[in-house]
Length: 193
Image 1: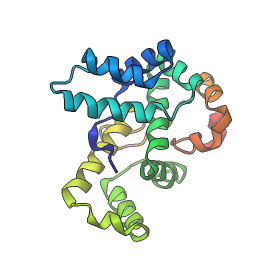
Image 2: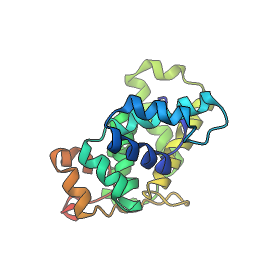
Image 3: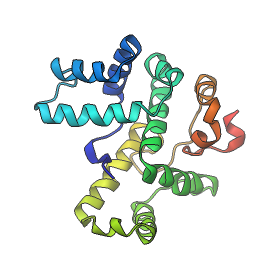
């Protein structure tokens, strides 16, 4: 539940992924980001927190996916970062599959905030530790998750789901784990090649 650090971090993620392609060493990337303030953060603590968050997500992508993140178009970048977020946070992955995708498949193209609240309540029945999360933190989690969905171009400002348009290049780089990754998107199986 530590995804409240920010949104999708598209520009920052591409910057770090570019360095990783050059050095193939996340520790060296982190050191460079912090020493040169490449994230343009106001404080070192903010830079450390954001850098740690981005790297933890990018580590969930394989080399071919990192390469497409750097060299792909904005839509492919957004989708790859969405996959990385889903892989990093089980809660978000479950929300993507159980709520976002299911609503899309059942032709319910809106995503009201109440869906998040209901989902959160269901998950807390199985994970009692979630009941300790304060209402303000819960609201922040919802806010950040919806922001990430918007930045990945999967949700409009009016909370309407956007069908994912998975490119052949994206489908190729997610081929080894395609089924799991495609399940994170509002898309019909027949539309994904």
